[in-house]
Length: 158
Image (cartoon, rainbow, N blue to C red; front, side, top):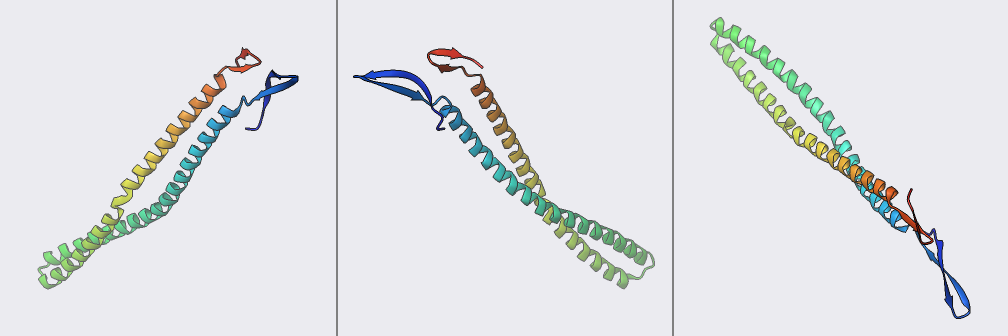
């Protein structure tokens, strides 16, 4: 801060020199540090929200596709049960191959959605870090506001 306040007089020979102090310099430095920390957290949260946005769309598409594959699988199993009940084994084998293919596709889709838990965990950790920094910042600002200041040899509180 460039804000200066006269704080005393000094005599040097025949000259009077006014001494000045910067009463808000310490608070300004603390605020700059807090601002830098908050900027870092804001950048991290912005990147995390972008990642979550992209991954949420992918997750929704994966879940929708998995649901459709599961419905197709149930339909194929029902057809196979009907064919086996009618004792038409060659058709049953063909249906079982279709079911196997559907199961592989469903397994692949479920495997793709596996990483979403890690994404939500990372988001929760970033949010808790932001809350912690916000709390520390609030405590620091409250502490700085309640700290007594000295002007002209007298102490004054807020």
